[in-house]
Amino acid sequence: MEAKFNLVEEPWIPVLKDGRVVEVGIGEALLRAHELTRIETPSPLEEAALYRLLLAALHRAFMGPRRLEHVLEWWRAGRFPEGPIRDYLNRFRDRFFLFHPEAPFFQVADLPAEPNPLPWSKLLPELASGNNPTLFDHSTEENLPPATYAQAARALLVHQTFALGGLLRRFGVGSAKDAPVARPALFLAGGENLLETLLLNLVPYVPEEDAPIWEVSPLRLADIEGGRTRWPLSGRTRLYTWPARGVRLLDEGDGVRFMGYGPGVEPLEAPHRDPMVAQRLDSRGNLVALRMTGERSFWRDFSAMLPRQGGKVAATVEHAENLQGELEEEGREVRVALRVLGQVSDQAKVLDVRREVYPLPPGLLCPKGEENLEKALKAAEELGQGLQGLALRVARAVVGERDLRELTGFADSLPLKRLYWHALDGAFPRFLARVEEGSSLELWREELGGAAREAWAATRLFLGTGARHLKAKALGEELFARLMRQVDTQESAPKELP
Image: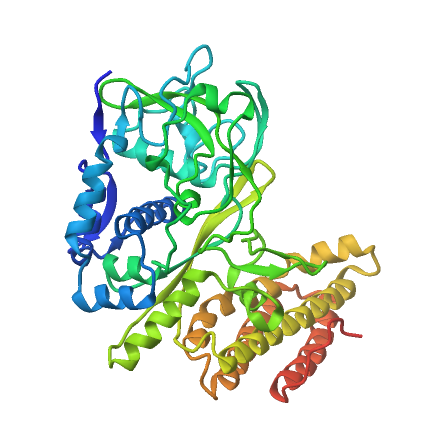
């Protein structure tokens, strides 16, 4: 087999340039980052995986940055120094071939494909394959078109980054473990162009005792068979390029339809935290990674990662805040977006993939910003609980005395709670952008009241005109007025209305 499709040079990373989506190689993405707007892909997982790859290459090319001052120098220059990047990518060029007889990128060269090759769709949770439900795709394994080399490379990167643990039964391994960031939400700071985004996430780095996958000896079947190879969860670029599964893409000449598939490197717990992961305290007082959930927007859990509540903000967020503060002291206006990326899962099943974008104001991590955020989210939850109690009372008035499960089911069918939270999904970014201002909480209370009133108005229309429904509306009006008085007077709303 000849070496083929080098990821440093071949176009495969989708980026926005001059308002159009084009594909570039790793080299162009880094050397011309100042000319590119951002990585542009509909997949949140692909976006996160591609940024982690580029950041790993930058960390190793510069063997840093050791300090924030180095990042500031590159920001002021308006581009990355070309020499270290060119030298580094040239030195490891042979390790970036998607197809290679000895060291295919992120793969195991001697992994057997027969007798049970898998379709390439196994690599992407968005595609219908095996245990995954259909999220955005309606192809089947029987009619799946081949992936282009660029698609296959991106899918491989996504799978190595986000593979969920579960049954495997291949090459002496019964079940595989999660990739290190398969379940946490990942925090990425976004700037005005690709250069700024990379710098905002280029957290100061100690390069010793760390190496990305392309700097270590290529894995062989003998390394992964029976789960023989285990690495500690430490070293930033090791985590950014973790080989969670053994894969060998099968080249069909113009694309990839099938692959060999097996276990990867097993993770060993170590006292190291991924820079893109935030933590919160669980019920036992232990720090755990903050995750996305299927039932609620992620912003409702923002305060859990704040130091005031015993949590830890993602290092990328803290670094972006520090960089933003230094630049604003120099008189530079910097607008930063906070991108939260990840998947919602249930054991080995992917239920959803998410991208939520919020403003990242410079005062978020100051004491006043933290305090205002905590109070705002607490007020939103308390009013939400009050509205849920109202919905239960209305349900009981309509259907009579039933068991709690039936009453809850009827209450949940009302648009009250759903429309309340939907309105706040749009209002929260406006609040967050002004979180450190003295008037932010008053403006938030106005948003809460407006969201609740619109939700209740829609609920009144939703209810019927029979005697029970009219009685339920009258009761609801009384309870709702009480809730609104508590919002207007800044009192805590009761969790359950009497």
